[in-house]
Amino acid sequence: MTFFQLPSDSEFEPRPERRIYAVLDSVEWLEGEIGERGSFAFDAVNADWFDSIDTELGPVRAGTLDPVVSIAEIVLASGQSILIDEIIRNAANKDEAGERRWIEILFDQGDLIVSHFPNLFGPPAVRKADIKPVPEKAVAALEQLVSLDEIDSATQKNLEAALAIQPGLAVSVYDVGQGNCNAVLNAAYQPLLYYDFGGGVMWHAGTVPPGLIGLCVCNHPPVILSHWDWDHWANALRAVTHAASGDPLALPWIAPRQKIGAVHRAFIAKLSNLLLWPDQGLTKLDVGPISVHKCDSTRSNRNHSGLVMEFRPGWAKGNGVLFPGDCDYDFLPDQVRQKQNYDVICVPHHGGKSPSANVFAPVAAASYKRLCYSAGDPNNYRHPRQETINAHRAKKWTPRDERYTFTGRKSGKQKFGHILLDPVWMVRSRSIPSPCACEVPYYQYRHNHRHWFTYAI
Ligand SMILES: [Zn+2]
Ligand SMILES: [Zn+2]
Image (spheres, rainbow, N blue to C red):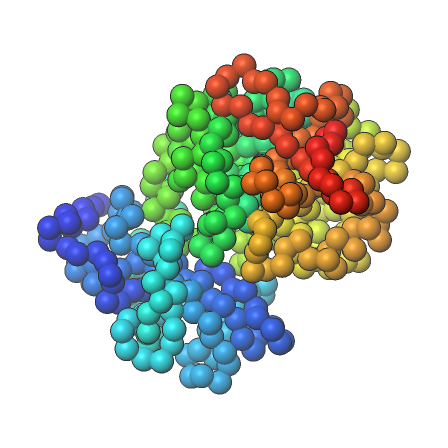
């Protein structure tokens, strides 16, 4: 196998790109019907760089792709061109067999307005552009560039070893802005395992609380990645861990095998211990109080084809804590949907749109039940949606059960809104001492009449 090295800076000027090859990553539908007008985010590589490689000689190795990856966001409306109509039609069918489509974006010409982000954290340059299809031969080579095929799946034994953690006691839903980052904690409130390691990206990069430093990796916790959406892993690239604590990129990452783009591939190349879930035959893994379920791998939507976690702490009256990531209730694995009865749910998809009829009800017998919403304030998606909050209330969750990660900042004091779930030790202090240096302050504020005050978690 021939590998290609990236050209050095002197040979190759990576920015600003003249052209990029881009694959659709996500769509946010704007006002009107789905399929009319939306904001399309494309994951891209520099086309001049890519064309300079002779792919006939062998596959391109991902290596350090950072200098050649970027993100382009374009508002597209139907009726603009045949190609745009096709992109929109495919995206609207994403839950079905939506076809993956690469396009070439040519800057400084044409009528489209593109927000071109140099990386996940911006800020974007606003550029004029034209788009055209990518020839089939180049598509095959681009797919090879971003493919995970060369990475073997983990064995069940490897996964079980990575998931064998000390007994967990509490749960944390960290305030990372518009993203997701949850953890199972020991009695000292140090993370023993993370579920997602994300945070706000692109337009939402500013929703990550300023000064978020201290996410603890002292216990070398495994990270279970719900799915590959940027806002579920991006904080691993930010300096959010305490310097003495360790490097999140060196942790074991347990992740689903999904279709990704070059920005993800560049990130994966930095992970030293990636454990890809084996799709053949392994639908569920139980290790002590942790269960990991694999959603249906055949779905093209990343939200609904990833990994879902359950944690059963000693205090649970029902099935414990459900971490669904961005997977809607409808698409959760059958075993999860059949048993339901959770004490705590980290509400799917940051409280985004959800089919209300299928929302899970809480454990009837539980005196302690919680619904946690992880979202940034403000965010373009209006997460959490009021209709989603109402759909849960219709299933007997009450406002008293609700916790929001952004509550701390609603107070205007720029505090964190980390949510701590520990009914055994109802914490009343403003921050919690930790044996390591990476203390994460658990502040929560609730508005009562005209005042904000901290309250027991
Ligand atoms: Zn620590
Ligand atoms: Zn998400």
